[in-house]
Image (cartoon, rainbow, N blue to C red; front, side):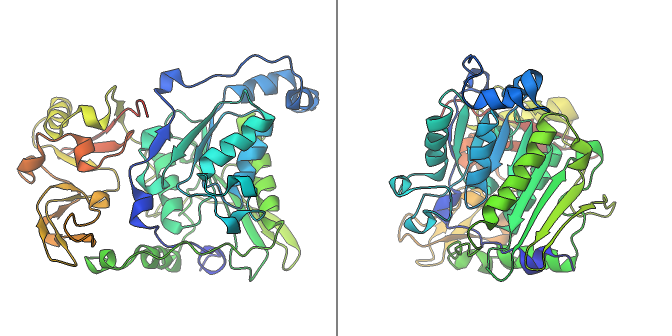
Length: 425
């Protein structure tokens, strides 16, 4: 088996409340803030003086945008270092700074109770007030893919297999390079890893080297199939017990690799390669990652249309018509990584709920507050007009699709993806 499943500690799926629709503080993409002009003073002075960056590299970094998903032990440090390099950021995290995070992550006592993405933005503003930083308060698994669509690279510093797989697959579908950073959070070893992927350039993806035990670990993290997996409340994310300093090292290695890609300098030493750090045995080495033709993740990017409307501005029937106009008759729709549920039942009072929606948006019973679980016979990954007639006149937001969400349309021999706009927060 590969090192992933034995050394990298992954969290269980978060509480249902953390998987709610993301609160995206970014405005319309075309109105995202841009750099204010500066004279090269402050942090820029050293960027310009750097022998491999200079004026040209500084200008190149200013027009690139990097998304950092996960702002914990590693991610909070990555975001701060990328800001020092002058790279505009999209900061993504659903968490809040807790007292136990102080010192172990890049937060202070005054940040306790704040959202991590907001605390990160305030820290960056204290050093680089002019740097554009967009905050997305969301679990990445409930993120609309189009939130990442205008980024140039995505960095994953998340602590679960399912979140890492979502990021890796979404980056492939959007033709984005992806850098994955992880460490052993159990405290049992001093191990970390930095990997770069870009399947659009022919590289391996995150899962190309995975074996059956890695996939079993993912299955166990997500729970068994069927209703039973949705009955038990999810466990809280375990704390990271890595020694102080290990997160700094992994973050530092990752930032160097990210900047190399952003500068278009030595990208071939980053993409399709893995740096393994094991201080328990005093070893640092680099290996090449080979693409696996039998990989379980899809390596073919989306053929996509980017819509100018949000999910609350288009009904299921209207999207079906758009898909039919493009692909012809007998079209089925599929929300990205989120099946449709026609009916659900409460595990407490057993009340039925026959309102169609996406499975991630089932939530709690309006009567007793217990969890709703789907009736398996009503669950459809792909659905046609006749499967959920009650949903035809409802908007995609009513069904639970997040802003920037993706819906694939399938015909007998073709597929096309519609990416909704993010819009105003």
